[in-house]
Image (tube, rainbow, N blue to C red; front, side, top):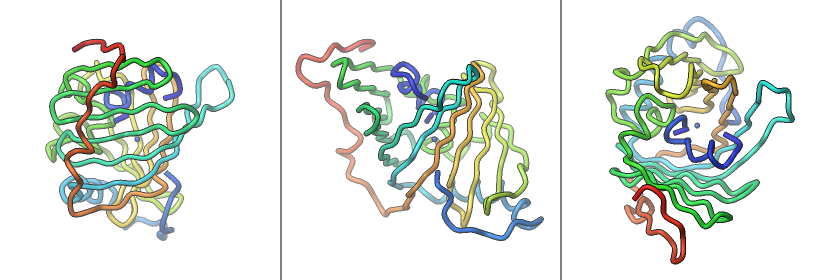
Length: 216
């Protein structure tokens, strides 16, 4: 729920998640509506799928690192987050465990999902409706056609300092996260569509034959 290097990508649900769609008029009403939109998004969108683009800006001034892929989620705790470029990596939450599959390394990492989500950005996408127990929310104003919400973790061990969430029409469009190392990660949801239901098989993972499994 939630980074450029392989080890960092595996922290999506522990750290982790958009080209802006509809252009809404910026103004006081839009700004005041950001938190209400976020609450409605978490409460009402139970199943969704789409595509994303991710850019990570480091403090060293290196060239930003970019990645893209596809995702699907079914609240609470079930999701599939697939990086297609620049290399392939798959993250699957099955409701109990978080599986991370690095195809190039032929390595699978597994850990309890509750430990992985916690007070992380991924909890906004795939957590339950009580997400505000983990985040302190404040109005972030309105810009770029989006209503913004600033969310700060209530627990110091979350792995990130703060995030900004941009919403329009009750849907999350953009996430901007600053982690504990000073890196800024921007995730643009180029497509995020609510659906009636998702095949549960999509959220199940079996380690491929010959894969090195760590943490099971």
